[in-house]
Image (cartoon, rainbow, N blue to C red; front, side, top):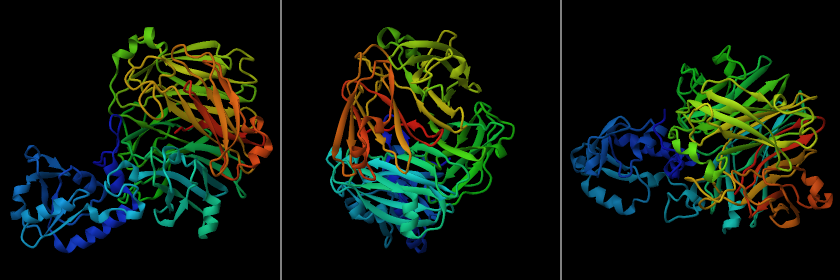
Length: 635
């Protein structure tokens, strides 16, 4: 397990991690270590507790004379396996150089120089700062907005290509002159290309296509990862995106998949990885997020709840991409069993690929939280918060699609999942419910909604379902309810899947940080969702759901704003969705073909509602039964 702090639900993302783990910082640390190698031993002064992360991410430091601290309460504590010593001992430490594990240290350096051994050089982590031109806030290096970064699975190989789409949503918060700095890593972790993309001044669309990148840089086929850094960001310190994978010339079967942003911070564990069916192969794409190799056994796989983890053999080089066939590590574990990935904070949220009959589809696992405990308060909220936590997901038109739901434990302490399924038509009428029971952590239940719905129900227009807590048979809840939703086209056999967690939706009362919003404190009673448009014969669609924990407005007041590539609104349409209802929308049925054609290569639809929070899923369709589906992102 890497001794790093990444993301905390109370404090958010750890900017120190992002500052140290940036690929350019990794190169600078290598140069710094080489510079210090001839001056060992090194005294490491650690005023801010950064030393453990520095040494975890970059373990090949020159020999150390010790870690020194200023706070007397920290003397004798252990950091990175070393006992912390008093800064007053620094002069007699025998160090030939002092490395201050901190940034913005101009004032500090002169004071430390006075306390250092005679003739010792004093240097700080300012030596590994990013270039000034990449900083929006040059006065405070550890400003989170200096590190609006993320990774994307990126591939152009074996007849499969990828296309990343997003918008300059930072412009909506006043940002100007925003640009992306990008680095493409190959399968072995080698840097294949570095470049920058200037973003539109307004909230324009962005599209990065693997085919265009191969042509631009004259690259061979590749499967790797794309690092993105938004320079000049305001309002959000994460690069959000949707990523399509699609078949091109040379593919054995036509296919589509859609996933979204990678969550930016590595986690200790991930869950929601499905075990393969007998006729499937499930590959987990392990993509090292750091400049240090993942050691053999640094990542393990376990059948959920079995507590018998199996190590991944062999090292994974820095920034490398490795496809792991989970059946080879866990033979005999079959769908609908689930697999837990104990990733040791080495990777951001991984993608997995399910291959059946030669046709792949890609989805992602989710972060399994270590900080949650059962919350008894969730048992007694119905009088104020109605049905409380809801996990809404589409039921696609049943004439053509099967819809399957599988609850997934997503916290290390989650022993039970007491759940019920409520099903609604588009008008918001509850047409069925099904009690799943008080499921154990190791359950292997995947419910096909055909078993719950009557013949003909939701056959043409579809609807949606909501998982809710139901304590009739006991059990505990922690508010981190998750599920995997799998969809299969009945005639083509093509499949797509997505996963997400619950929230409280559209209620006047609040509980802790629910209902959430994309910006500001709860209640989160507004909607701002990004919907990409189709490209290359692929047709865009969305399923918008209006979930309500308690009663709210009878209908939404939803605007669909068609933007061109520069961010200009060129058309607008209004729709109304019933409370507890849903709508399946195709932009090419809402807007004239001429308006869509005028959007350019990176046009999109912004879904806006100031009266309620909608939850959305989006995807693409092409040909006969080829489709993708994932949940949407907002900003």
